[in-house]
Length: 138
Length: 138
Image (cartoon, rainbow over all chains, first blue to last red; front, side, top):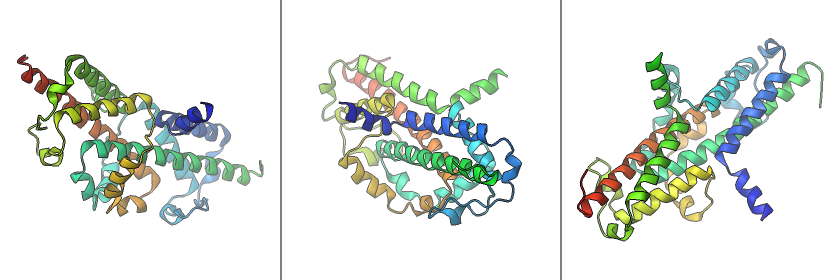
């Protein structure tokens, strides 16, 4: 039974949200001088680095903190800057409009779960990069 | 301040998930003979009824209950039937692959919030339809 429980736990959205909060909290505790991250290019060695190259590590640090606030408050942000990026995302997303609500529910539930794992990893990478910069390696 | 708080509350994902649980609980308490819903076509009077016409109200009742279980457990279901519908959903969703994680996060957060509101409404409609069938109108 233990392995079944463990498998369930790994797939819990609530746990993924909590884990993200913990990792970002650790990042905040470690990064005592965020300004050292300015002008350091973001590079996590993954395939998607090309998409992130417009931001430096300092901007990414602020972004990861802002997402933590959204996660912890559970509130959906209202702002026009986000709406702009959504317009881009929604372009070509016609399959969603035709899908039934239960499919959309599972789609977004899994999507949120997956992206939380990605963001958690990015926060861990940023923390390690900061430790490299100040000359402490773990 | 009160109106700001109220606005925030209406946009909380956690509140939307909880509200859905309450409405489906009420549906379960009201629908004492779910078999009366068999072969009753699903029709909520909305524009998307065409997408739902393959299910009768009984199937929809079971589906809304299953989604409540997923919401309350917070677990991401593993099953091949769901994977099939996701393949359809993912077809044409290339913009998501190119987006940055924080955009994807906001996209899924808002999406989950919106679909919970839709499913909540559907559960309320189903409860009202059941009351019509047994001759009780509110």
